[in-house]
Length: 286
Image 1 (tube, rainbow, N blue to C red):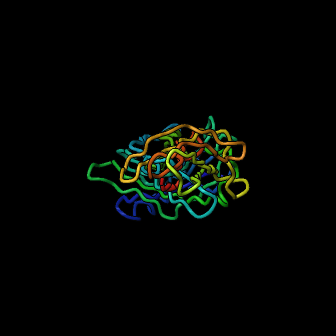
Image 2: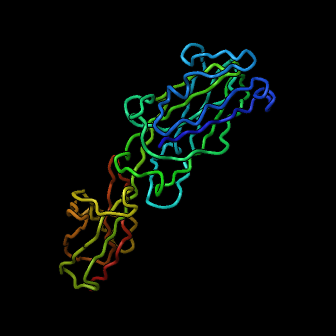
């Protein structure tokens, strides 16, 4: 389960690519490491096999995954993630590849985890500066079929590889990082309503997050959640207290009703779960 994208660069059209007869790397199994992908390939006319670690001079820079934002996945639908980067090589760039991986070594079978899709037509375009290419890869991620393991939530690294116009390969397996997080939901319900001034109100709610193993949302236990209040006519929320979720993700606390206003819960998020804010609930104080 690895993100794998191969991008054809626009360099004087298809003529250059067809002349070189550059092969697109074979589709290895999901648990094949990056070193297999870049271990060898033909240079075209000569048919010489060249190791990627001996001749490649392509440098990568300005890599951005998902616009620099967290990749937040629920349990259904498709999340489109765009990766942009610059590839620089005075020998030209014919093909590039991009994928996200986890672990300690992108070339090991157990170092690349998670399941994500591939893009049909990512592209690199040569800029006004010779040898400098701006690239874009698109990853459609389908949590229902791709994210089967809850343990893959967290930090991922971006692998970028390229072939130049002489079929020499280069790669960098830690160009940038991105956080893939589980989507969270949060609710808030303040009662009774209306209420007399000075009386106690109870605010209940629940914090849940996507469970990729079951395809459903499940309560998120033992998490700090802030109870906030906004006076009617104001646009500013004030934090009243911090409440911790139960073993099933539920919330319950009390406070005194003083004026008309809105109550809500807000969750800051964690390294594996996205932030979430409940819709506010209005209380009419008599």
